[in-house]
Length: 291
View 1: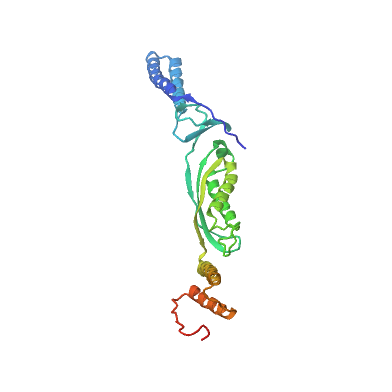
View 2: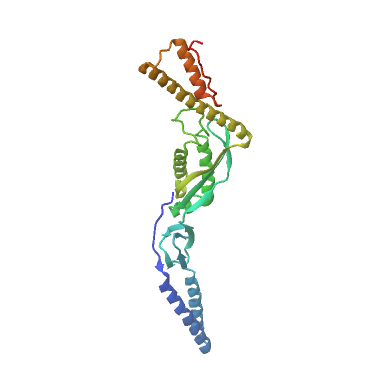
């Protein structure tokens, strides 16, 4: 694996001044050689002019959050990260790589979750090049590498968790309910995958999550049924607590003594009132409790 070497380059301004001065010198010398018919002088000025053109190839600019990877005849010579106007050996191949943060808005892909349910999922990844040598030489195309590995990571992550949990187990992490944990897991896996290409993962988030169309309606009904059951369970728990509190208060205060049959009747009536969906109409008993 390639290792990045940060290097400096010569100032481009000094070489630019030299380059500007050599052009008129070569032209004046050439004209003088033609005037006196000096073949050697003419040849020397032509060589000087060609050398000056060759020197001009060595100029390059490094913009903020950019870098230039220098390669000489297949040998990596270093990376210039300092901003400015520079000059380097004209034989260097100067590959430009941006160090800016970039967004990858992944396409929606259809995968199966941990329970085998088909789902649609997509992710947004914020990334940047951290090591230019690895990005240049350890992978063929680091931008395509990011796209392919991001999709592979999302597929693997989606298959490691269920879409949702329909029970009360709090220790089960789902794609829908455990967004923070799932996003951290996705970032960790992307970091491991991108390390080969010298890519840093700044942030990774799930941007789209839904059941596939063929099961979306059925799963929606299941979610609604689970919500109704959960709500009913909570209502019954509250109603039982209120009935218990009422019976204990009546017994403690000695307001009325109820036998087991009347307690059962009172519990039944209170549960109907507290758990019923429609409003209950009371019936006033004007006789004794046993009528």
